[in-house]
Amino acid sequence: MNAFLAAGLFYKIITEHLRTFIIGTIVALICGTILAFLLPVEYQSEIIVFPARHFSVSKMLIEPNVGNQEDYLELGDDDDLERLLQIIYSDELKILLANKMNLWKRWKIENKEYKFYYLKGKWDHYINIYRTNYTSIRIKVYDRHPDTAALIANTIIELIDTIQKRMTAERANAALQIVKHEYETTIQRINDMEDSLKTLRTMGILDYKEQVKAISKEYSKALAKNDLKAIEHLEKMLEKLQKYGGAYNTWSENLRKYRAKFAVIKSKYDQIIVDANYVLPLKYTVQKGIVDNKKARPIRWLIVLICIVSTNILIFIYYLIKSKSNNYE
Figure 1: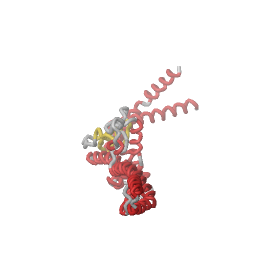
Figure 2: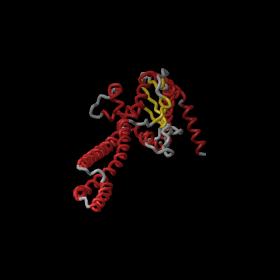
Figure 3: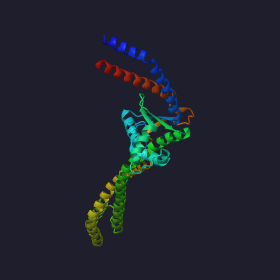
């Protein structure tokens, strides 16, 4: 019943004030057309990227781990997509893009105190970011010049890797300094131990265990022959071995351990140097921004249609309120 009453009231208002609706439609058509042609024309350039798996370069490409290495050509999953989106949505990317493309002047952001606030507002207007159903990201860039729209779109792609390299470099350089210090310390300790062993060798301590065996054997023979001169010489040698043999054994054992450690440290040092200097891109670029000379915004017929519909709705609401007021009176 209420539906019939509503339909009847709607029909009554339309028929009684048809002339007003027609005049309103004509005025809205004219105003909407003027507005549509006054709005600045904008062109669109679009890029599409897929996320890539995120691993360190050395672990993926250099580390000898045959059979267990990740495929560096594999597309990323939802987690990788979220990481990529965080970079694209980051304030750092907005500022880097604004500085590189001088968007402060291009987007007429003159307020220095609140310029970042206005930058974010302009960003939302000119740059639209979508997450697709195919685990990819679509970015639409608008500008009053088609070539600039394409340039801004492609610059966004470049800056993604710039930010990722900066993020990676912070940790990689810190790790590099730690490993470099340990690497240089290990080399210094090895050199010190080799110098100490060299000094002992000049004193005749060449191989403690073998020398003890050989001298003991010769000493027994000298005792058996009662060769006093040989006994005296061998006793001096045994005394020297007794005095410096412990130091020789200690330095030899430590040198062996540090040489084994050096191989590990050297491998790790080489890997971290690679990580500090090279970064694999976080994304696969499916489509770069191209110059499209077809106007994207404003959609003039849609603006005119919205003006006509909204005008007629306002007229209808006015007469509806007026009708209700008359009924109450």
